[in-house]
Length: 134
Image (tube, rainbow, N blue to C red; front, side, top):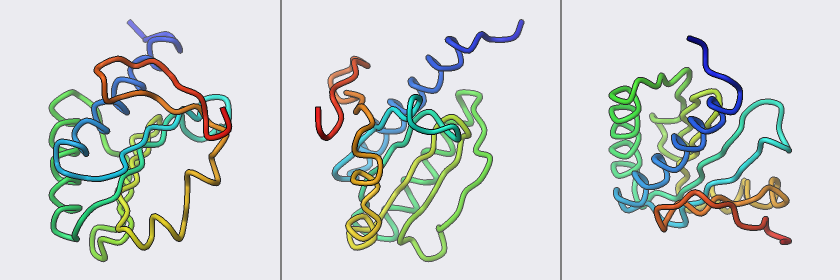
């Protein structure tokens, strides 16, 4: 039976929260989930985090792919693993960005998407908190 849009949205939010928790578990820093459902026609959520080294970023990438595959999700595109400066995992409704520190500051996705609500992933609840200005 096909899932409704609301069910797909809940699934995307759960995937974003799980990706954020995995990033935190694998020692990424400044982990952030942005709700882009009202801002972007392309995706519903961004997960943004900073890696501490190329090796750590690649390990996190592999673990995210492993866990999402085990949960029945598919990575449609992945890019940036060779240079490990900005790794992108595209799950369609969720896009995970794993930056090194320099590229995180340079591209500043938080500024570009500053009005998007932030999702509180850390306390085990999925309530939304205000955007950068809210």
